[in-house]
Length: 126
Image (cartoon, rainbow, N blue to C red; front, side, top):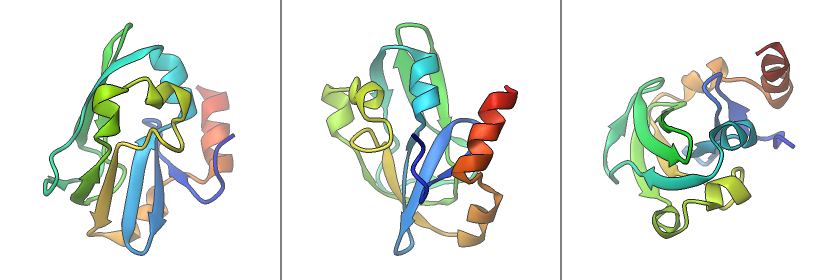
């Protein structure tokens, strides 16, 4: 369920790094907890983000939730498709529902993130 080559946060974001660029989104657990997602406020391309700081907002029929940057860096690209189809976060959270691509500024921060097994253990303890 949780891709092996991704890393996870306790705030329910995921990261997949290729060539110094991290693709970031919310986990399947997060989308289930949120319910039907109706709006996504994407970060601005070129913005600097800090690990653990809010960089996007997802609104569902239940609530608005801040999305926290799992790693620091510069936003290179955002998933504009979510503007017209925010429900993609519910349908494919680990694929087409990515939120942003971030150029890593501190790759060592990845070491603080959870493996898929550790994330699932964390979910079981919640």
